[in-house]
Each structure stands twice: as C-alpha cells, then as structure tokens.
Image 1 (cartoon, rainbow, N blue to C red):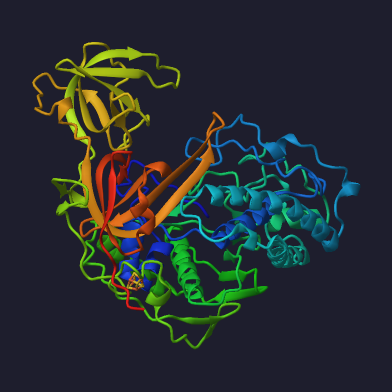
Image 2 (cartoon, rainbow, N blue to C red; image 1 turned 45 degrees about the horizontal axis):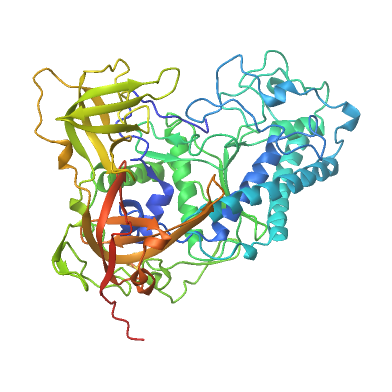
Amino acid sequence: MPVRLAIPEVDEVGPFNRLSASQVNAYSSCPRLWFYEKVRRFKMPQIPVLFVGRAVEEAFCRMLQETPALLVANASGETLANIPLDPNGVPSRETGMVWPADRLLALPENMWPEDLDGLRTWAQQRLGIHLPRALNDMKMEWEKDERKAGDWSSVDSGRCLEMCLKGLEMHLAQVERCYGAEGGPNLQQWRAGERPQWPSPDGRSYSLPFQHPLAQEGPVTWVEAWEVARPWFVDPNAGKFAMNAIHPEHWFQGEYDLIYRWDNKINIVDLKASIGAGDRSGNYVEQLRMYAMLWWVTHERKETVDALEIWYLGADVIKQIDVPTIDEMKAMESDLNSLWHQLKATKPSMEECPPEPSPMRGFAPGGIAVQAPKTIRCSRCDWNAVCPGGEGPSELPEGGSVRLPGSSGSFDLTAIGSLEPRMTLIAEVFSVLGGGEGKRPTIKVTQSGHFAQLQLLVDTHQDGQPAWPQDLAKGDRVKLDGVVPSANYKGELQLKVDPHAIVVHAGENENMSTSLLDFRARWNVTGRLVYRFEKKGVGRNGKSWHRKGMMLLDATGSMKVEGWAADWGPQYDLAEIGDTLVAANISLDAWATDIKGQINRNSKIQITERVDRED
Ligand code: SF4
C-alpha cells in the first residue's frame, strides 16, 4: 500500500515529531544545519526553482490522472479537480459522494486514441493545459512567501514543458510495456471493476459498483493500457502531507512520488525537475533507499520493492538505484530509530548538533557519481554568516541589559528561550454569544473587575480535546490554560486560544494567583540577525500594506520579529547579516511552539555589535 495513515489511538509521536528522509539527509550533511532549520526554524531563501519543481510535478500528475476516453485534449484542467476529501485532506472513503470521473460519460470509442502516438498527442496537449496553470499557482505562492528570493522572470516555461514531456515519454514506456504484456496480470480484475485499497488517482471513487466503465473485451486496447499502467501518486487535489506512508511505530514517514505496480512489481520513482548534478543527488539516493525500507516495514516486512528509480527530467535520464537487502533495511531502520530518539524524542541542544559538515559529493548530470568538488559545504551554506562552522562568531548574545542611544535608562533583555508569551489563569465567564452549527462563539471573561475577550482560533487542542467546553454559560468559572494575551488597537485585552491553549471548567477548589493584570505587554530582546523578510499586498479595502521582519538568534533560541514597514527605523536597513541587534519595547505573540515579536511605533531597533568582516 502506498499510503499508511497514522492510527491516532496508538500514535504517541504525533504528526510534527516524525522523522523524514529530508530531515535525515539534512542531519547527515551537517548536524548544525539540521538544528538551524528544524529546531530554530530558519527558512532558506525561497528561490523560484524550488517552486518550479512542484509545478512540473503537479502538471505531470494531473495529466496522469486523466484519460483520453473521458476528456478531449483541450478539456478544462479543472474537470477532475473536485474530488471529495475527508477533514484531513485524504480523498474521502465515504460512500454516496459523487466523484468527478464517475459523473462523466465516456467519449464515443471512435474518439479514443488507437495507438501510442495517439496517447502521446493527447497527453502532450493535456500537459500544455496543466503546466501554465500550475506555474501560475506557484508564482502566486512564491510572491506571497516572505522569504522569496530571486526573480520569477528566470523561470523558463518552455524548459518546464520540456521536462514534463520527458516525463511523459518515461511514463509512455511503461504504458507500451503494459500493452506489450497484454495488459499485465491484473487486466481482468481491472476490467471487472476491482480496485486496490489505494487506487491510482483517476477521479473515481474507491470502489466501482460494476465493471470498469472503460473496460473492453478481447485484447487489451491502448486506452486500457493507459488506465492499467497508471502509477499511484499523491492525488494533486489531496491536502498537503495527507498521503504519507507512516511507520507502524509512527516515528518515520515519507510520501512517495510515483509507484508503478501494474505488473505486480513495485517500482518507486522519484521525480526530479533538474539535471541531477551536484551534491544533492546523493540525498536522493538515500531517500529512495529509506523509502524501500518504509515500504517493506509498512507491508509487515513481507513485501520488498523491486526497483527504485530517479527520473531526472532535466537530463532525460532514469537513474536506477540498487534496492537495499533485507539486512541493510534492518540496519537502516535501527539506525533511523536511534536518530529519531536522538533528534525527536527529546529536543537536542545546539551543542549536541555540532557544526560538522560532511564532505561534498560530486555528481554529473543524470546523477552520475564523479569526483567530489574541492569546495567545502559551509561556503555555500545559507547560514554561513551566523554559524561558527562558517564565518559566524562562536559566541551568541544571551539577554543581559543594554543602554541604547537616545534613552536615559537601561533595558533589561530577556533571553529568547525565557520569553513567556502564554499565561494560565482562572476567570469567570461574563458572556457567551453565538456559536453552534460549526461556528465559534464570542466569549468574554472577567476577573476582579477586568475583562478580556477570548480569541478562539482552533476547535481542538493539540491533544484532541475540544478547545473550549461546548456547554459554557455566563457565571461559569473557567481555567484558561496557556492562552496568549495581547492588547488590541483599542487597548482591550485579548486571550488567544491556539492549538497549545485550552479553556476548561475550573475545579471547585481550584485557585490560581495569576491575574489578568500580570499580562506583560512589552519585552526587550537581543540576537544576531539571521535574515530579513518582507511581505506586501493589497487589503480587502483596496489599500496596500507592507510588513517587514527579521529572524534573530541568541544562545537560547530564535524568533521572528515583525511589524509594519513604517515602524522600522533606519537601523533595520543598516544592519548586516550576523550583526547583533536589540529589539526593545516589542510585544509577543505565539502560535503553537513559534514565538513571534511584534514591533510598533514605540519599539526601538538598534545595532549593538557589528559583525567583523575583514574583506
Ligand atoms: S555553515 Fe557549515 S557548519 Fe554551519 S550549518 Fe552551514 S554547513 Fe553546517
């Protein structure tokens, strides 16, 4: 089965704590790099090429999903888009839902392609319809990204189409083989309408009531070969990360690209919209080997994969990877489990993730191993300027106090790891308005004559309990556990309920000394500047808006500080990556484990130490 969902009753790890192949590869390339990106949550610059790969894959999968027996070559790209999804974004198993392909009548058979060339021509036109839309969606996503870098005009859509067409030829080779094998061993089951537990996405429901609507009699037809050879892939309409294969003990997960299985041989394919040159090609090999292990483990250790392939669409090369032996997979599973304990069971400290990069690996186009380059990994690392393994200093700031120019007193600086954006207190419900039928109520609480509004941003707490009691009424005593306080523009107190906060009835004898007035509105922090980011847009009222921000790192943690562009002083623009900055008089916000600082017009940004650059 290409998908194995988590079993919530026994899942003690949780969706955010599993290991993935990309994390393992990041850690192997440099433990400190993994720490920066996964623990400190640094986000690498988002250059267009990262989005292009996703657009190529999406266009390719949307084409694979379709069939020339239902859609003419210039049909809308949306025809199969509206599949039913369950609340987790998984294609829904609820019967009674109508699936888009089940709703369509087959085209007259004289319009179906009668040979491989006919299939090719139709599929090429489908790619021509899907790719521009996928690229446009990705362009919008890139434009919205606060870490966007580079220039979208560098994207060559002709080159992207070329890569899609190369992928099509690789797929057509499977279709041709399937046709040559008279539809393979599963043609009759397919004709009878039998579907595997996770069918290859084709816009149809999980089970068909009768025989397959496109089934023919006699020798396999080209359209049947197209249908039968279709690999499994993540339905492009499914939710993000909804279709993972999860280790039975829940500590590892992966999402396969393509699984060919029409000949009862399991072939896992990883699609790459690149030529496959450079160090990263080594990661792809390791990723596929981990996927082979995952397949074996999620099939009760009884079924192994038959082939592992990387399709380098930019180089028009299929690279075959040796399938690991059972002994190798056992060792890999045990190593990865140890790594999970090391990295995820408890959060490691920065010192436990040393700046020790592995040597660079050399690969020529097509993922062919060649002599490694002489360069060292740090020289092209995004975190070079703040990392002691690169050109960054070995010491990081850690709270303290500071005098700032233009201010008479000194500022106490809180170490980032000691910031407390949450509070827990007991209060009385003052009013409950609205709610019900899927809507969240408006709840006001009071304590010693002071009032606060609850901001219910989720329905359920991270542990699965309702985020607030459904029977809440005026006069109830409630415990507000881990809520995030803030003051709105009118100075009114708000208490945010996110996945890490919960409202419950307070026990009769339960008391707490925390008061609403304990809310601390202003904080001062310091840290090294890791990067700046910004976002612009136009609001619903037609007015344009512009926000800017920065990522700060100190010895105890990291945080984003952001605010309206006009509220940042000149020091923000003068700062260089690696400089130490103070952000004084900022307010705090939090979402789950992320803490964010907000600047306003009374905040102060000051460079307190320049990075020493000798060039
Ligand atoms: S600069 Fe070097 S040591 Fe530091 S994170 Fe990057 S690769 Fe690792």
